[in-house]
Length: 271
Image (cartoon, rainbow, N blue to C red; front, side, top):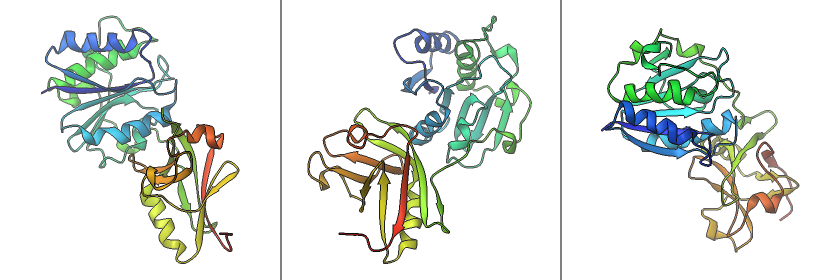
């Protein structure tokens, strides 16, 4: 089965995502196309990388994962195809792939062979003219090496990772990556990093600082607190989430994408 996923910031009001699917199916009629999302915030590469990281492992091996969040379209940024074990990716080389927790890339190539593009390439819609036809060919079994010259994985553009444990300051400083449709605040604080931090606390107390408010425990599930009460939880994406049971954390805390969430070791916390 030729399976292709699409993750873009095109939205669903305009024709862009649908046209990409039309190109894929014209070249590979047996392809099965799955929309991960088309509602990444416009040009938000970080949000796109985290959404792709949260999704790709749940698809069968051999799936071609296409990410088109591409503020540099038409410029000098490269398009790359990459393989890590059974996982295959097609994305602009703008840092999206650097946020994956995939195994180290076995193969990376610059996508330059215009034989696999549409005949006419717009400088504003590479999703249609390059990404879609290349994905169709990849899903049909094209060897990635035929797409263009090899690129060392070390040469891929990398985004700075926040949400790191600073043992000197005794804190993790992270960022809200997105608020989902329920108003849950999804941070970039990885649960493994958080577990290391909590282990370092020993018997010391910790608190999670969100805006002007403080949370002093991790909840097991939303229902562990009363409706309309806030909580911190290990989110299904593998990151720390801030939520409100049956409510919106974004509204409750007055916090949104790009705001800071800090986890700190504290002494003498008032109970």
